[in-house]
Structure formats: structure tokens, C-alpha cells
Length: 195
Image (cartoon, rainbow, N blue to C red):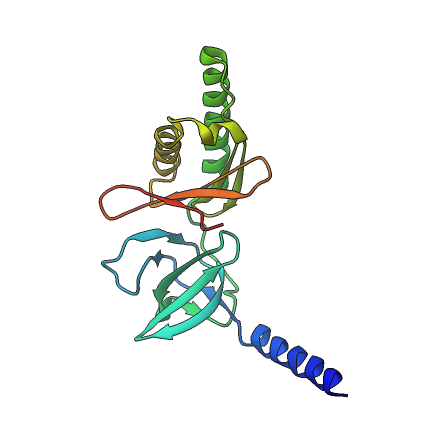
């Protein structure tokens, strides 16, 4: 009987935890996803109208949010979000078109590197939404000493294509994140995965 009541208690606690995650939607045309709750903090990437985020906590007019597409946690002003999904969204930047151009360039770059020095680099590129993308690289590429420099070159291509702060995840062939590069206050940041 004790085991049964223990299992029921655990079930109810886990249900409460899941239920406490509130879904919010971006309601403003111009809003950013920041590293800290301040407009002076580095921008992770811009947020499109209608972007779905999960609320973690609130602090002094700021929302600590989880972007389920990228797995990133950041901050945005409380005035930029609502529990109601916007009915109309304005035609903003066409990130899909930017992504298609970027993907073509990255795969062409990979092909050129393979032809020049017989090293496999980038296998595929996936759009995570907005200014966020993932580059799938050959597992051996991560072991090379030049991978970080090449990753920054790819990031600059993506950022220039978007003309805005951007986010790139670099993943192995099993699609496990190895590191990310995102916009920083003065230069892009390289952050290793905690996995």
C-alpha cells in the first residue's frame, strides 16, 4: 500500500511540474532574446511575432524563457509576450529564404574543402526557426585543430545572411550538440555543450 501511495504521489508531483510550464507567444514585431534580463545584455537572436516560448520565471518585468526549438534559455521583456497566440503576424524577414541560401553556401564550402584537402566537414544544415540553425558536421571534423576557425567562418556567413544577431548549433553525425556560436557584445561567443 505504501508503494502504491508513493507512486501516486510521484505521478501527481510530475503532473504538477509539467502543468506549471506556461506557453507564451511573442506579440511584438521587434523583440530580442537576451542572455540576461537587461537591454544591455548580449542578444542571443531576434524573436519573430508568434514565436512560441516556455515561461520559466519572471523577474522585474523580464521573462526567463525556454526556446524548445533550440533548447536555449534566455530573457525577454514581459511586454513582448502574451498567453494568446497573435491572430495576425506581419510579414517580417524571410528567414526561410536566408536559410536556403546559407545551406547551399555551407554545403558548397564543404565540397570545396573536400576537393582541396580531402577532409570531410559539413554533412547537412537544419533550420531551427528564425535566426537559429544547426550545422551537422563529420565526427572527425570536431577533432581537427581548425574546426573552431571554420565554425566562426560559417557563423559569420549565417549572421551576414540574416543581417541580425544569430545562433548556430554544431552537431555531430548523431545530431548531438558539440558547441554553439552566438552573437556576443563585441564578437561571437563559442560555447561548448555541457553534455
